[in-house]
Length: 74
Image (cartoon, rainbow, N blue to C red; front, side, top):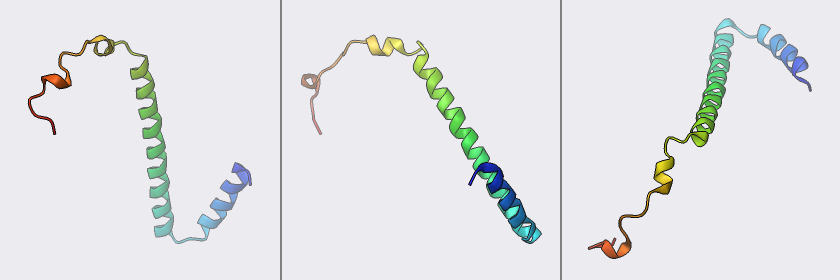
């Protein structure tokens, strides 16, 4: 079923429900939209950070300590 047909069927079904149930469904749809937007924002932030040179100095930092420097190993 394509999107338009699903939307029409959903609207038809929603029109048969009581108002309190429609409000509940509307709140859930708002939640899903917010969740999707948050996922997109997080993905965008990850892409920006991965392309950024801000923390490149950490990749080039040489090791200061090794296992032989440890007094106690757990």
